[in-house]
Length: 119
Image (tube, rainbow, N blue to C red):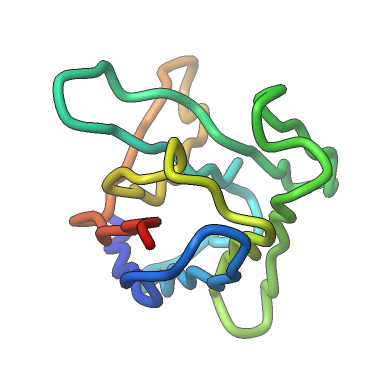
């Protein structure tokens, strides 16, 4: 069992920066694929970035060059550094931990943190 708690959201002006953190409790953190997803009002949840246990990283095209995902296995924490934020980045951001156990995908989600980009 893994519990995820996000922090770091807030209100920021266009062009500003925020760093989201997601702290995990439970065992096996280093084995999980970690991801950040977001959901804007009236839209489906979308994948923003992932980082595997071997540090392979992927980003959705709309955030490439602006967002950076990282993980610190010693602190059981995954981060999302968001720079040059745009109004369209406004959403609730969710942390995800995924692992395949006995052939089945196991997913854990945080409660979400609101990011609002507005002047």
